[in-house]
Length: 260
Length: 333
Image (cartoon, rainbow over all chains, first blue to last red; front, top):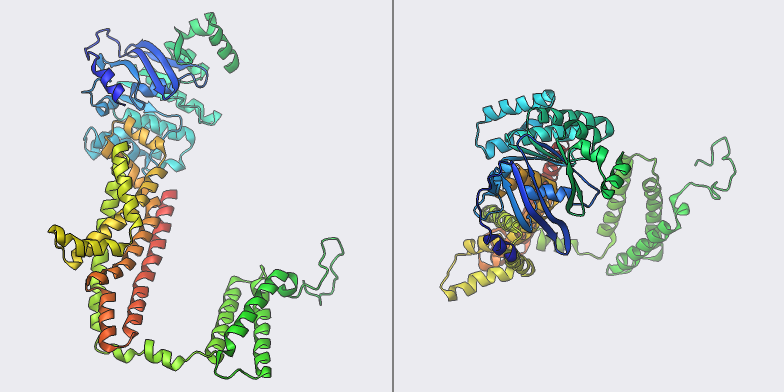
């Protein structure tokens, strides 16, 4: 614990002017003896849609969760719009308002209705009025096609509907970046489409997105780049076409042969 | 079932080998247990009268009990009988045993009544008990709020997961859960004045109960907070909610239905423990009853106090159950 802080104090928290939305430099994450991320460096441009793929246990989710510090990185730098978010003077809650996150298990708040789920963060963090939050929330529900479910509790929604509400909830903070951590893995097959449609629209509207997913169709169509992670390292980085059709990497080919 | 029925039961290897007219034949263990109870009852209770009853009389009582047992037991053990009938049978069984005890045991009912149910000693003294009850309820109310606040504070501090802080909080909780409330009160009331802190009996009671039951309440809150899925915390944090907002808007509302039943149980236990305050002379119900007991040289006021505690606590316990069901239903909607 102390080691982490002191090592970070040596870091110069300068602006990083590569013009990238997200810049990750040599990111490491250790859980006690387990070295999950072994030095990840990459950058994501504005409006880019990056798919993160890889076999289970390769650190995809941890990578995503490190970037909004749901997990504290062990070492490395993460720059969001050029600002080092691991610097000691950073208010991580303000960083997180710029990064929406969608989880595999939806994680809607079960004691609140759909619209309340969406309104909660804008009202208590952005301090906007109830009326404005409701208007914005209804617009978002309209966007994900669930206006009629505004006053319904999450338990009464199907998995696909819950995930769409979760996306709307993340969008309500008007984030610059959206992270999706296996958004369709917990869904029944017939509900995957409705969630992917929403994500496709977001991609078209120019949202910067990082998506941990194995939905080949979606990735081929919507992703600009694929990061292929194996054992905590990026082994390949390229367009879907490059990776799916011209990859020479043994691990990539092995993995792709399994999921296709 | 019915041996008198016209069509005989088909013969197979699962068919009854005996007429199924009574549970007492079908269930040897039940029979044995019933007879054990019966003999214990007959041998230890009934002959305690000054003169042992004549043998024939004794036999007839036992025969009567056997018949009642056979009748009610057959109803109680039959899954097809309606529950209302079973309730009547059970009440009948209890009534018979009570009546036999009242009628034939060696208990001295008259003296018992003179001692413990001598309501004349309470004439003109009810208002004293009433005042005591007022103080008891006031103590319970304020200490209840106090212990909920203390418990909430500890539980919320524990969510910070700071090992050092947790160590001291655990020490506090463990210490207060293992010290009897009476010791805490005696310490605050009699020892603190030597350190220059003199507190009145009411303040002492409120402080002791809040600190002590706060420790219990913190465990209730902690269990509730831990029952909330970690994904909820992550979702809230990923939206940029601060730690405090996450706790107050996401974690606690979800923990509440889980916390209510054990917490109210704790608070009811606390209300009972206000009686301990009589040791530091807080003028609550038991203290007032004991004063009357001394002045009237009769324990009836104590019985009256016990009845008052019962009358106050039973509706509370029932109300807790109703509330609990409502919260659970609201969660399911």
